[in-house]
Length: 238
Image 1: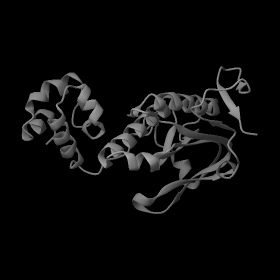
Image 2 (image 1 turned 90 degrees about the horizontal axis):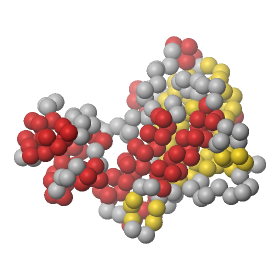
Image 3 (image 1 turned 180 degrees about the vertical axis):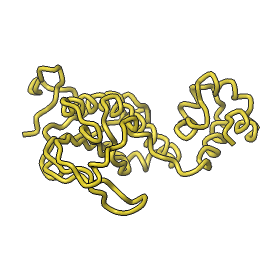
Image 4 (image 1 turned 30 degrees about the vertical axis):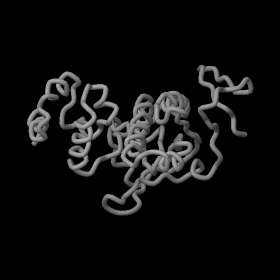
C-alpha cells in the first residue's frame, strides 16, 4: 500500500489524512516520524502510539539519510584512491545513563532524533556519514565529493551539531551534549572490505591513528580558543 490516506484508513485513523497532507508526510516520510513530530501535528497520544507501532512494521528502517545527496563514487574508487580526507567522529555524552533513565521506546526515539539532527548538519556542509555506531557517527568530508575547504566544512558542521543537539529536549533537568573529534590527513579511500551488506569502503591513512586536529564540545569557547580567519572557532588539541 503506497497511499498515505489508505494506510491511515486501515488503522482507523483516516481523520489525520488532511493533517498528514498539509505537513507533506507521505509513505516515504513515515519511517522518520517521531513522537514529537506527531504531537506537533496534533495527533492524540493513544493514536501516536498506534501510528508508531504500525510504522515499526513497515520494514527494516535505515538510519537517517546521511548526506546521501552526494553522487556515488566513480569507478576509480573501486581500487582505492589517494586523497586528503577530513574525518569527524561524534558521539552522545551520557548515552548509557540516558538508556537507564528513559523508557526503551523513548530512548529509541531520542537516538533517532539525535541521529537525524546530526545528519542534517552534516548534509548542510556536503559531508558523508560513513557509519552509525550506536550513538556514534563516523563522517567523511572530502569523500565521495572533495572540496577545497573540507576541513572548514567539518568544523562548521561540528559546531552546528553542538548547538542543534543541545537544543533537543530529553529530560527536564538536562540538555544533551556531544563529543566531537576532527582529523585531516592523507588517506587511501575505496577498497571494499567484507561482502554483501557487511561490505564497507575502507579508509586507510594518518587520520585513523593520529590525534584530532581539533575537538569541539558543547562548552562555550574560552578566550584561549583560536579564532580562524574564516570566522570558525576551534580549540587546538596540541
